[in-house]
Image 1: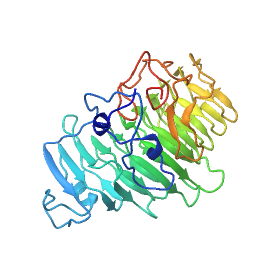
Image 2: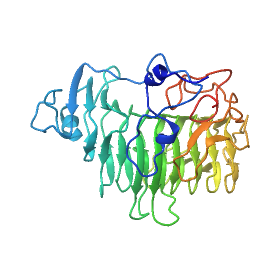
Image 3: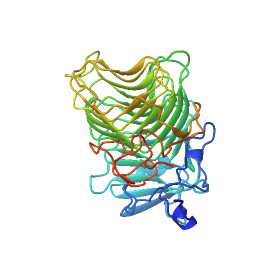
Length: 389
């Protein structure tokens, strides 16, 4: 069936495959969509706060940050936001952000681009576009671009990075690591990266240190429903003291080093034990990457791999060293609606895809990248998008 115009207008995210992966642009626009999807009845992300602040390109940082008299920069709002504040950011371009203040479990600080991907954080020649050191912080629906090494870099716990478009970061050298989203700090925990589109995260030459999503913390949370492609390193990379993480329903392709690394280390200033274990990797699509689709490296204990579609990677599907054995693996063409290696394609699944109804419920999110509920019919689909089209 096809969605009516009324149903289209009700979509909680305008994440349409043709506009979701703009290779050079900075915003996504609404277009028509014909797809067999049902939208979520309850928004799964936090959207309200007890206190409201507003930011606009026509505002002033000398204003009080009200709707009538907004701030000019997101940084100003970040400097005064308290637990329970939602910071509404209107369409426009803003400078790099540093958020240091703490929310709480019941009252996070929420930074929200009111129009998805139309509030741009642009940070040319900065190490990071958004640096977060606050606890219980949500960063949602922003367009983030232009920094040298990191899109969002957090050193704290309990963060949520939701529905952002992070793209075109260009490291000038391979002297240091970076990623679209970095969860740094060897003892942080429970950081969620969900529903982000991350691409063109590059460094010169054959640089294996610049990734799509990079976690180095224990009990670090969830990496769900992300679309990651065209990075110098790996689409998703765990290292140092990363463990007990869920990686589910992501789609990663055309990453130079490979799709995913599940690894740990005990080197330099790393803290013990530095063994990656307790990681659950389910329902992911890892295709057309350099080297392996999914690889364990360094110090690895036992991890779980179930119902992943791994296909067309240069060195093969899996390379595991920690004792885990993958189950339910599919080694077939995923049959995207319109695959384009450089981006700008439609990475939903055709009705005939071998990934349709072949997923597991183990650690799977209850909604997909478009916030459509899972499953649409039958069993879970594999990859970031639910529902054959």
